[in-house]
Image 1: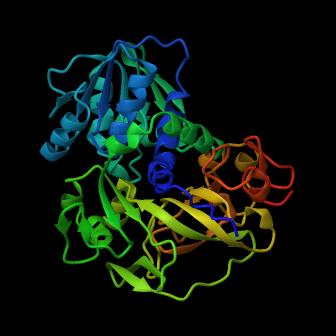
Image 2 (image 1 turned 90 degrees about the vertical axis):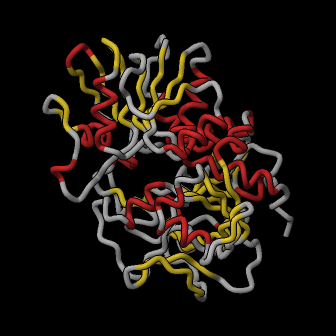
Length: 400
């Protein structure tokens, strides 16, 4: 078989494809003619950094300011993005024409509205989903979490427009990857640590006493020292391993791989990274109940090893991004291209098994082939041509 992994840097950079697709989707909800003088981003994590980078691309002459209470994150973002004005609290900052809530802290939702200028736009980007519903933020009787989750638009006092942004269409992964290809410096800014191997214990020059991925997931305070940590998985592991929830703890365990079932694929995961959502799941801040044996993780890049019944065999050998959204059964919003807004949506690493594993069995709807790049095998091999899906493979990978 042709060697389809030809460039390690390609895999590193495009691990950001999934989070950047989320960010780019948010800005597509804005008017193309929007004039922005000041942009305020709440949250200086990796998503906040991606927002700052992309906002700077769209509005190069705007002042960008970030509000972040954590001192370590403020220091990180200041060193990585010197053009940003960084603040501990929203007190005394310049009113913004555009505000983005890139943190799950409930108070950030209302602070963004309070510090916005008249007729400003506030993007409610990050969800809350606390199990205790009275913790969910409201403003002038508007349910801010519902606006985010349903991608609603609401206008509150001072003519401030609230715009929800939740998820993205799989096709937006293509646009995200194209943007990363044109702007590879995003990777060097947002990825602040590398671990070799899913079981690796060395983060840059720091050795952890347990697998680094277990430490980073379990200890949220430790994770504040970094933006994004990249895990470079072994391409040909001798022993298959995965990160699971077991007996109330995060554990790294070995396993024997299985074959994919109907509408499933088996993926050799080659890169993965941790999202703050993964930590919130462990802290009990999501509307799910953890079960023993659940495999964590939803951000990754891999290659399809085999397919189950109902999936085109031409996906085998395809490099793909791993997507978090899983749709159980038929759903009219999926058919309309808005599956990410489905009321029945489930997520990898939360409701179904995720990608913190050397090989993953995934629903075919949770992968997106990488297309139109010199780093991939021939387009005939992966069933694509000129960046468009071939007639036998639908946008979610199902046989047509």
